[in-house]
Amino acid sequence: MKVAVLMKRVPDTASVFAVAADGKSVETGGLKYVMSPYDEHAVEEAIRLKEQAGAEVIVLSAGPPETKETLRSALAMGADAAMLVTGAENAGPRGLAKALAAALKRMAPDLVIAGKQAVDDDASQVPERVAELLGIPHASVITRFALSGSVATVDREIEGGSYTLEVPLPALFTTQKGINTPRYPTLPNIMKAKKKEITEVGVAELGLGAGDLAAGMAIESVSLPRQTRLKKIIEGEPAEKVRELVRVLRETEKIL
Amino acid sequence: MSVLVILEQRGELKPCAFEAAWAAGRIARAAGMPLHAVYLGPALPGAEQLSGLGIAVVHAFEDASLAHYTSDAYVPLVTGLARELNATVLIGSASALGKELCASVAAQLDVELAQDVLELGWDAGLTARKPIYAGKVLADLRVSSVPAMASLRPNVVAVVRDESPVPEIVRHPVPASAPRIAVKEVTQAPPGTIELTEAKRVVSGGRGIMGPENWPVLKSLCDALGAALGASRAAVDAGWIHHSHQVGQTGKVVSPDLYVACGISGAIQHQAGMRPARIIVAINKDAQANIFNVCDYGIVGDLFEIVPLLTEEIRKVQS
Ligand SMILES: Cc1cc2nc3c(=O)[nH]c(=O)nc-3n(C[C@H](O)[C@H](O)[C@H](O)COP(=O)(O)OP(=O)(O)OC[C@H]3O[C@@H](n4cnc5c(N)ncnc54)[C@H](O)[C@@H]3O)c2cc1C
Ligand SMILES: Nc1ncnc2c1ncn2[C@@H]1O[C@H](COP(=O)(O)O)[C@@H](O)[C@H]1O
Image 1 (cartoon, rainbow over the protein chains, first blue to last red):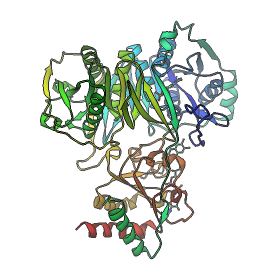
Image 2 (image 1 turned 60 degrees about the horizontal axis):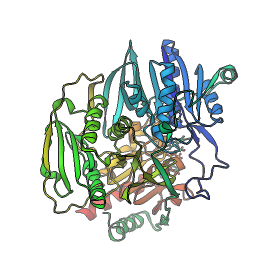
Image 3 (image 1 turned 30 degrees about the vertical axis):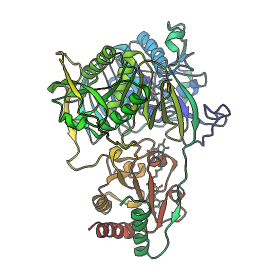
């Protein structure tokens, strides 16, 4: 069985962000880059399948050349091979998904696992698009995955509950926190990862043209959220503090 | 030329359906286009609820097989209708299922999608404000592909109804299909449970609650406030509560009027989930805790003393 994992390299969201001079993007100098947190869950789930059922795990990413470092981390977690798609850096989610789907078509995996959201642009749509382009069934935000033969049973989160779904493979799923705890790579596995192959493929080679990659959405400006919290510490004896809090919530804020 | 809005249901129309319809109605008016809505589910519950939102026509796909969302069944119907109406704008809800539906429909229509937006606007085309970098940055976007698609985050707009009448209902046949995905079981939270992302008030507990046996302390406050219960990742990782309660970067983003953080230190990843709250109250015994830098009102004190007093005081003023 072949399992493909979609992985994106993103700035660590613990970073401090500043608006760049163009007003349309953030300063990238000094940002630390990591594997998007939900993708760690996706890689982990794939490696568990490899351990349980002997799957071959291939990690796929579209991004700049530095993405190779992050692919290396996934290989160190236990993935077998990696592929980097280049030339889709300026595409929107629509074009990006086309590039990833084209690469996956070549791989013909039985299962695709992705994160539910990449925490840079928080687009929250690339995997679903990929599945639709490939014409395979899919379910998002899953917190449990079990495989029996060629049918996956998954729990998918909804507001205030969950669905248990049965989905025949090939299929695509996106992971939510709670599905597993991603492992840390061990030193021997980090060494082994250095020898594993990272294939590079350009978008032209995948048959994509400018029309496929043109972004139909543009950022006109970015800003930092207004952070004008009152930061008012209420002093006094415990009972007084509570009374004062309730008073301001009622009279000043009109919440209660 | 029209604006089309997707009305999400779970047995009943969800609050986010009215929010999306209201936001789409404003776009329709600004753009001078009629507002159409699409409903998929069992028999449409009470069309009169849809008055006052400016909806001209509701396209209803009513069938028991559509009671629960699956991409297989929903995506072709919404895609087909958007094409048939030649929709210029297509708006959905950024709920768990709504996001999946919108992403899939956008792929089928081969258009771009602004997912999980806080505001929508019309300026010779669709504009939207969307949080990026886990909410630490706001992006103002323009969607130029047609139909221009966006999904609206639940609980961020206040619906104000006007005089517009109950919309015309056009019932569409639901073709028999052989869905690949089977919904085996639907687990609902016990009735009366308030969903975090939709809650107007949220009370959250962190490592400071010391153990799962102490949730009743916070639950009493939740009951008094009519609030949903949230948690920090530390509390979730300790196994004290299900991760569906987690607020933060890897949990849920909540947008209540009131957020009460109890025994939570205020880590940056927790802030990512509570940032949209209108008023944040922090209760923490450590005066140096970072949560006091990101709250509106803070009480330095032991939550086991403060929270019961607060619950009692709220009950008192409410009676
Ligand atoms: C990639 C990544 C993603 C993450 N995602 C999330 C996320 O989604 N959500 C999230 O919450 N965290 C997330 N975290 C974890 C985050 O960094 C913090 O570790 C976590 O939020 C801490 O939880 P806490 O505030 O409950 O615990 P602590 O930081 O341990 O704070 C406990 C607080 O309780 C106070 N306290 C103790 N006893 C009492 C008492 N009796 N009365 C009053 N106060 C008391 C203490 O003074 C302290 O301030 C993430 C981390 C990473 C690296
Ligand atoms: N450039 C990319 N390369 C590989 N996978 C991606 C890329 N962008 C998004 N994904 C996958 O899609 C998921 C959701 O991302 P997004 O739709 O961008 O929020 C991520 O968690 C990844 O699994």
